[in-house]
Image (cartoon, rainbow over all chains, first blue to last red; front, side):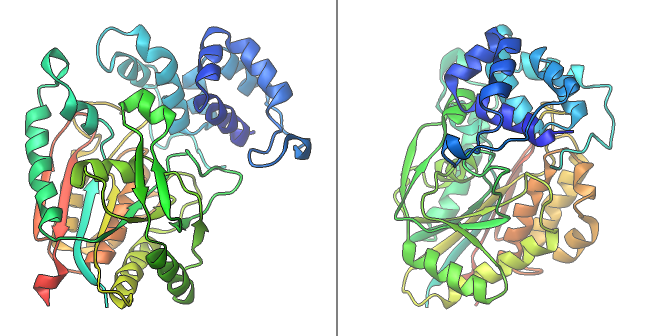
Length: 120
Length: 286
């Protein structure tokens, strides 16, 4: 399990408007690029001082590459990060206010307490 | 010594700015009532005539990140920029710019460390909507210097609820011990029951109205004993998966004092989460 890395992906995409659009239009390509080029960058260090050991599990990579937010919830990705990024990508596709947010809740409705652990 | 001019605890609803400034067909049906409630709440700060605002909030994965996560952090900077691209994007929040009060920041840090809280600090902090939303509601002029205090209610492992209460008590003592003639308002924002990114999110009310009812009662009456008896890090998952933000309310109950009833209490049942507003005037109790 690399919940930290899932969160790092969501966090670094969400804060960059270009990456939000790139992940929306090309999720698999963005995930592959990010894992190869960005996963090991420590955010407040020069890129030369990067880590050497971070990678997704197959499940995690597939969940991100298929925009599968119920699966991300199941894997313990941070609920706030997933929600914020997916609103940024998909709220625009719904005519009604909160349409996407309510669809999101519906797609998670099979989860009951306790929810998957988000601690990292 | 400085005077605690007001203690204020509130929810921070990022949709208020957009709801209150929207017009015509874009204006939601609940906006007028919400604005009236906020206007009355704002007056409770205005009449306290504060010079400085201590602002307790929690970064929502904006500047603070999992590679280096502080539990409690005090900003010590001459200025603070406010709000982020993703808050502009999702909530329509404006960019803001606030002055700091480094002298009070330094006093809280030094004395807080000596009082047993190993506080982290930041000399370059960009504040997010947990601090800017209460400024928008309570002091939209944004003309007073601030001292931000950030807590971790967001990224487990979290500090225990009692530590939030203890930190609140310490902040109160330290502000009262600050050698200054200024009037300080201590303002903190958190949540009642709240679900984000889970199956109970964005319902017609908060996810757990019964928790909200009890929580409002605890805060309004200063009932720390009941709050501490009923609230734990595990129990806070039950009312909603973002309800750990209630610990910032518990911190503010520590600031206000055990069994000290709020001088002003109001709430508003909204979709998604309940709004709640509380003000104490410690001077009047003296």
